[in-house]
Amino acid sequence: AFLGYAFYASGYFLAQSQGIQVEQFNYGLWPPFAGIFFGTIGEGRIINGPVWFVMALFWTFLLGYIINTHVRNDALKWITVLLISGLGLAVADRHTLPFSGVAALSALVFFQAGYWFKNNDPLRALGNDKRWLIFALLFAISLFSQINGFVGFGEGIVGNPAWFLLFAFVGTAMVVLLVQLVDQHCGWLAFVGRYSLSIMLIHMLIIKSVKVLLTGALGTSMQVIDNDVGLGLLVFGLASVMLLPAIFVMERYLPYTLGKRPAAPKPSLATP
View 1 (cartoon, rainbow, N blue to C red):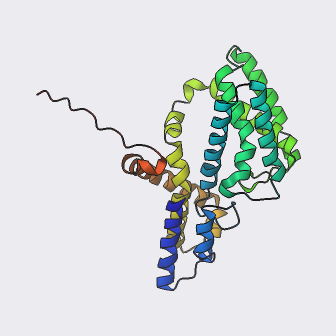
View 2 (view 1 turned 180 degrees about the horizontal axis):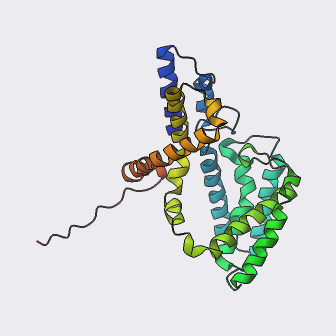
């Protein structure tokens, strides 16, 4: 969160020193700083958008850990989880809580379902034919997801809570089934998973930086880039390439920014 604000502040002062008027800096310095602690996507107080997810993820994991550690009865665990998630869904669209609290509370039911699935996995005993059949059925159900209208979890927009939960679980189950069915072709996902936190935290800053560079190099506007398919693909390609060295630097030299400990030095193979 503070890294994103540092990007914003450096650009803000650079624009001020050169007398350049940039629309994105109209928020000033204090609202984006406050957004580190209390902000919702789209209101201008979160500079590095993906940070909302990290905040919510932290609180969801913390709640899940407390419940699964201190509540012994399985039924009571689920009752507690459903009450907390129900509270989150009830205040969605109405209130904004610190540290993406609405999303964190609402997501607890998905966390608990994933925890249960990890320990039980009812799909393990099914053959591939049955898995494809279930996948097709879930896909057919997902086609009706527009019944619930627009959903933006980060903004606290969930529509009808019942429809939201149904289609969210359907989509999640489809992803799990698909990965299980094509597991032998998903080895490249291991890289994404291993460095997912780095990718999530830095990718939007790099994308925005690439867009700024292109606006200067091509003499165009940010809006044109956002609405042009070709330029969008160019942004995607350049950002993907720039992500690699950025991830290397973060993982190798700044692991504490990810909550990781520095890697222990490898023992020397030299003999005395």
